[in-house]
Amino acid sequence: MPQPPVFDNSYARLPAQFFHRQHAESVPAPSLIRINTPLCTQLGIDKTWLESSAGLDMLSGRAFPDSADPIATVYAGFQFGSWNPQLGDGRALLIGEIVAPDGHRYDIQLKGSGRTPYSRGGDGKSPLGPVLREYLVSEAMHALGVPTSRALGAVTTGDTVYRDNALPGAILTRVASSHIRVGTAQFFASRDDRQALSALCDHVIARHYPHAADSANPVQAMLNAVIGAQANLIAQWQGLGFIHGVMNTDNMLLCGETIDYGPCAFMESYDPATVFSSIDHGGRYAYGNQPHIAHWNLAGLAQAVLPLLHTDEDEAVKIAQSEVNAFPERFVAAYQKVLANKLGLSDFTDSDDELLKDFLTLLKQEKADFTLAFRRLAERASGRELVKTLWDFPSSFSDWLQRWDERIARDSQSSESRAAQMQRANPLYIPRNHRVEEAINAAYKGDFLPFNQLLEVIGQPFDDRGEWLDYARPAAPEEAVCQTFCGT
Image (cartoon, rainbow, N blue to C red; front, side, top):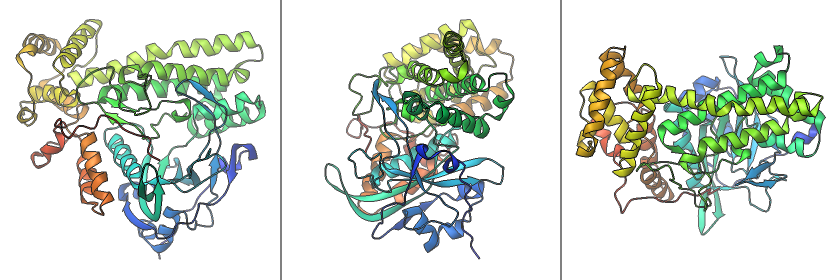
């Protein structure tokens, strides 16, 4: 007989000021869009139960298993550089936590389930489009090897949600190692609630960085680990041309996973100044600024935990500064590993920096597609020519390609190893904006086939599949999607 998941809710055992207990708003006519079968297996959730009426009740917030303890969590944050002292889950409920068969703990959260005390005047609901966008992009990021929240399932609700016009409502069931944010620490620090701040750090250490507990300064060790996780994460974003779009401190998870796929997008024509978010008028979160913003956000985390780093304020500041100051070097080291893999090098030397910069200059000059250019380079290493039918290097790259040929000839690895390395580092398929919008627009008309097909393609981003080649094609001028929106 199908069995419901068993939740074990460690965050709900923290002090009362961390959250608000409540249920989701009722929905009139929920209907299943999709269940993520591989993720069910990973989490040890019975897919048959999840597809049952009881499972649909959970995914739509109608009713939860007895072991669930639904809460909306509170946090604060700097949004586009401006301080907001109280944010929180304004449209989400943390149902509870699953301990997977591998021993790892995961949050199960509904997004779009209705108002909470932190909704700030919003309705707490989500239209269908943003739910599908987050499902697609988060699962694409997972397939690309990027730490990320994931989509366990999605349902339509039967509600009508009003934004610029009337839209069908939907709910996403999101999974993350936790939803604890930089802004969570900032919330308690801003209230000088040291007891809560200490309890939060103890929870984060036990849950994500247990090695830190054995350190002489556990909170410093936790800060060090978070900075390292974020350095690696942002390096992976940059290597894929991914633009988050809203890197507020309330959207940076302490576990080092990507979260909140609102106005996000993958860059097509290479330009560090690229912005898609409709609300990022000044380009604060442009592609090229993401490492600097991550550094800024982490400085905010360090400032928040200052009272726990040392009893002497000056010493605490020195400790925090030393950890935060290490971020640029740690990011560069992580980014160079990403670049070495993309360029087919066994390691990235100082002289390779000029080679890379010249390549990126040419990409910008030629308005070349970031994904296809690197994939075409990978094809040159392997002798394949699938991408060549879509895009090839113009003559302006000739001198650079000769320099690259000479560089890889000096490299220590075999040509077979290099080809395999570049194949794994340079995807062919990403969730291109026009394809995502095509899937959303079809779904609004009741057709989920484009959504399901796109999900299949981006779930295998490195595979050479000739029948899917049109999904690798950049947008034609009439298809281009130049702005993305928060939406929910």
